[in-house]
Image (cartoon, rainbow, N blue to C red; front, side, top):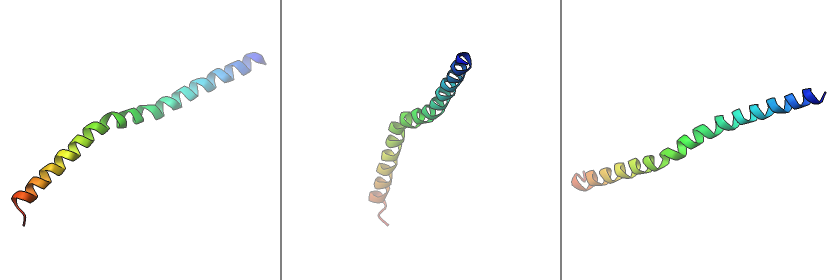
Length: 57
């Protein structure tokens, strides 16, 4: 009975590690690209302001 309980706990630990990986992987991808996205948006806004100043109508 103890061997079965131990095997169940081992399987549960493996499953939880898999779930944590599946959640952590996309979160790291998003957080790693936020700096680049912010730079891209700021550059785009600067370009739009330049167009507005050069061609007001």
